[in-house]
Image 1 (cartoon, one colour):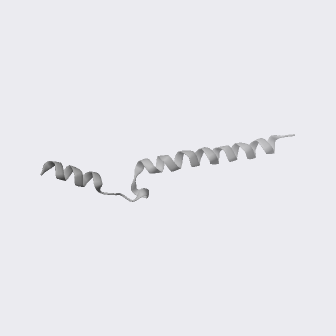
Image 2 (image 1 turned 60 degrees about the vertical axis):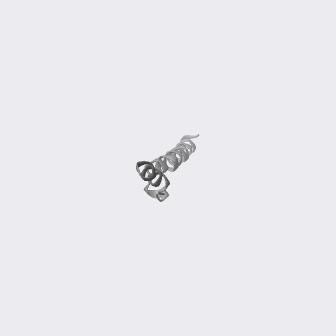
Length: 48
């Protein structure tokens, strides 16, 4: 009985936007891209 409860807990699915790790997988690269764009814009404005 105890093993069946463990199996049921493992097979339950959670929508992706409610999973904290997914926000890190999507959010960290997105923030790096935004920071790169901001750096590029600042570099272009400071160029002679």
